Amino acid sequence: MSVDLAVENSTSEFNRDILGARLRLPIAHGEGNYCIDAEGMAEIEANNQVLFRYSEPSGNPNGAMGDIAGIRNRAGNVFGMMPHPERAVEKFHPSSDGIKVLKSVLVSNLIHA
Image (cartoon, rainbow, N blue to C red; front, top):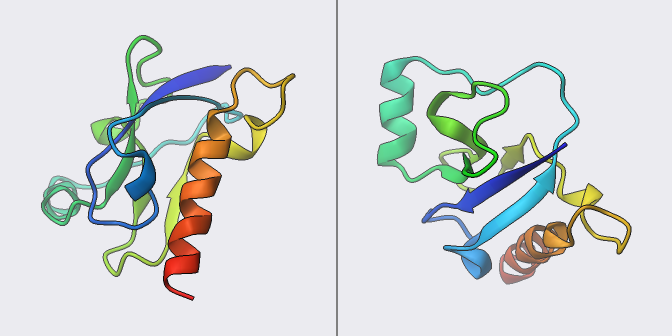
């Protein structure tokens, strides 16, 4: 199954090169989602820590709070996401949008190397 993602306007280098993009990436989880209390959600939103959100037309397949599909830590040096960009890089994959995500991460690491 693949999902649609919106690339959020974050202060992170991880997604700087793809801001505003719409991506389609596979998911491979049957359960599990991003959960946080209201205070924590307000904090990550205020700190622009959300990198990717599930979006239409596929919507939020797992009930993640705030439609969060990818997030970074407050320091901005670690990020995680539920969809699998590594499963969207070959011609036989459902899309090649994973290349955009992986390149953006690689560029951010080169900037800080």
